[in-house]
Length: 179
Ligand code: IMP
Ligand code: MG
Image (tube, rainbow, N blue to C red; front, side, top):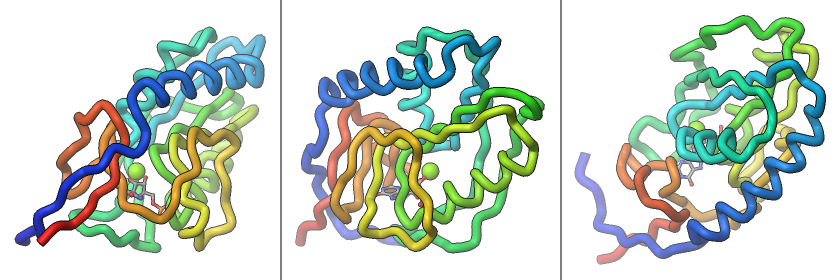
């Protein structure tokens, strides 16, 4: 697949992201205060940078696990059918769980994951997304905690890719196609 050339315009700086994660981690520590252990579930692959920064700010005993769902492939369009490609390693029944998503777009992925986790009867489950594009929503879902609401732009960086590239950018940028 040949790709049209594009440039990346910075949208959210690394410093702004770090400050927001400090706020969010305080709220989550309050939410789960007294937990014996919080199972932090990262949705692969886009959440890997976010989860790494989030758990290091969280003043709680945590366990980290990962779940991988099928998504865009190499395209910019979301698929409505969500499949589990890699399941959790640990049991979550009766546990406190925080689901960590990079970006909620149509909402199909998060809706599917919430349903899956709930079917395993955690004691308590909350969801957090770094980014939210509310104008794109198709499934009626909202993360309990959101880093930033953004307009309908295709973004990359801070773990988020376009055709597997740009995950290593330290900031969030938007993709702009050029001639
Ligand atoms: P949803 O199921 O449509 O909400 O899509 C969720 C997944 O699509 C996210 O976890 C991302 O992996 C991917 N995604 C959504 N928007 C973007 C974007 O702007 N850039 C890169 N990936 C995106
Ligand atoms: Mg994702």
